[in-house]
Length: 319
Image (cartoon, rainbow, N blue to C red; front, side):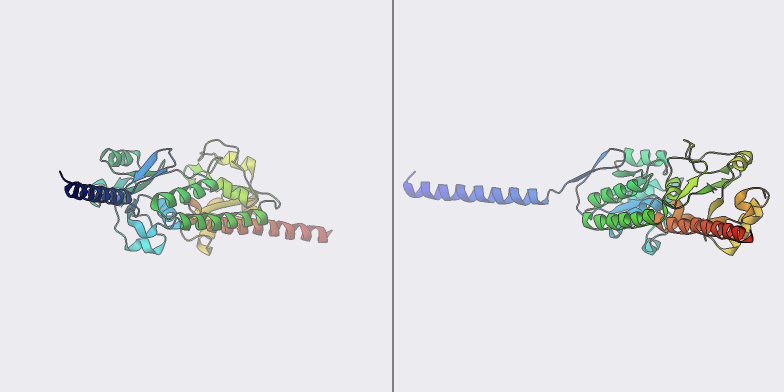
């Protein structure tokens, strides 16, 4: 091999090395992987920067949109109704009847499920079929923040998620400064009537009551949704009774509250007419809109304080 042939060979070799390096860089640039730990402590990994997502609960749907990932949601459960954009999305059924076959057929990159809310059977079926699931389990205000941030990370919308959490924290702080240190109002929160059920410790509604300067009369119960007897409630004798209704605190719901609770006229809340309702979606869903429900409840407890102060003034002036 002469010098010219050797030179040509070296040029070809250098060219091949350059091509290999370029191709290797191209492959590496296109090998995307994002891994995020969900709220069950599972590491969930995606191979796409813009995942197609299905949500199986209203709370999950609201949190996805709060995280800035609403544009990536391709289907929701039939109970998801907020924000209005979800009305245009396909439905995959609703708890407890979820259409697993339809979900698999849509080939989502991710299905967001709510631990303790969505059916464990459905979650198991999806995971056994190789569907990527992301577990949420927000039970308090900090859990809402964590859920939004983690959904932002897995969806690639971290900036929007951080902005949403910042706004949530500011609003929560404002409510706490305004209401949490006011004169306590004892509260019974009605979850169900037959049997009579309320909220105990470890559930977000209890935290909302505390945020508003209320004192949940069953907040000492470790059971999240305890069944109670009316005799027990009469002993605890709350200053306000609050329930929930789809339409919230309307004249109709107040009449219904008065009709039912009027059976126990000796209850302080019944005597003074301190019977209220909060819109169901705003108080039961663990999403940023819980603060909309909190604002309503806080104003209701402030109404109780104002009425009590007026009654006391009238009593003092009569003497």
